[in-house]
Image (cartoon, rainbow, N blue to C red):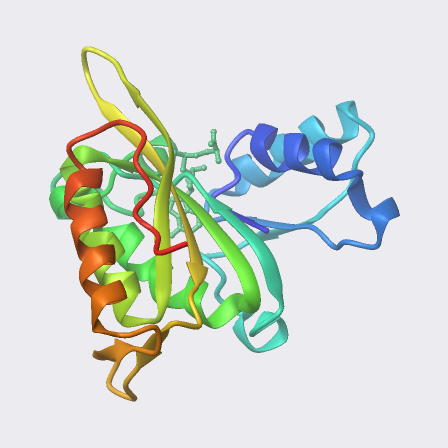
Length: 210
Ligand SMILES: C[S@@+](CC[C@H](N)C(=O)[O-])C[C@H]1O[C@@H](n2cnc3c(N)ncnc32)[C@H](O)[C@@H]1O
């Protein structure tokens, strides 16, 4: 599944890499911009693949149907810090306008991802340094997810990361989403925090406990 499919090249590439629906997988892409849905359809047709394309806000209307069943969720959200009133506007601005710290849409996507992902599901999300990715990871840790930066790229203008999230059975989560402790023990928990701290200073360090 992709949230915010834009031109459709990500979901199309994913389908081509994974063998499309012939392998028994189902593919779904959403975008709040109807033009993005049209262009994604064209991109898919040009590459001979087909997915369910839905014009909606994040995954609105799909949550109950897809709850706990998405094995792979990819998101390149609108992450650019902008005035809040630019977020979700009609037209192309919704492709980049992320509100305060670029986090407005990201912070709405995270709980939805938690609802949709299967027990072994993976979330890949693009973030910018200004989005405070380490804080996003901590937020997801409270929901029981481990995280790791799998790609980091910097240009003169921006520093981008792709973060992978997955449920970590060693992380116990309280009902109120506060992390209690790790089944693997306090030492592992400390080690994981140290890894996390060093991780953000480097381009390619694993934040996970595995
Ligand atoms: C940065 S672009 C990414 C496009 C494409 N996935 C890519 O990687 O090239 C963000 C996309 O998310 C869509 N989008 C923004 N807010 C959204 C929301 N609340 N729900 C669904 N899609 C949204 C935008 O219309 C845009 O197509």
